[in-house]
Length: 142
View (cartoon, rainbow, N blue to C red):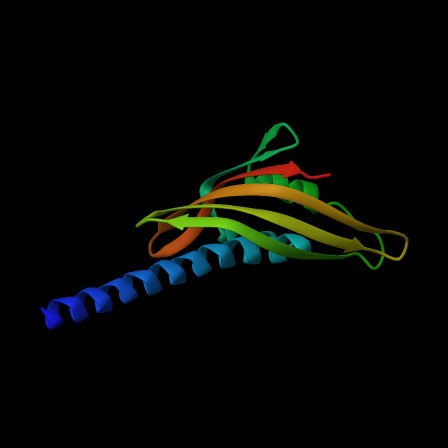
């Protein structure tokens, strides 16, 4: 009986560790995506999304190319964007992950400073052992 209990505890802890690791991996995809977006590094952004990625933004449907075109526009002198996240929920199964979070961007330049907040959700899928974002929905917060 003790062996069965020990085996159950061991398996439970391994499953819990695997889920925690997967959650961290999913959250890192979001973080890396926005780090790349902040510096307009299109190849790094594309590395974090699936080929059929869709973003619902400002009532419009965007692809990764739409987003790339928007962020490739010239920036004011001294432009800097830093994102921070409050991950509210991250759920994973074998090949799908669902996450929602608050995203805060601190944006500054020589002429302007702004803080913008969004409530966002994303769906990720595991492709060849790596999580990639396939869908994101972004809602501005007041």
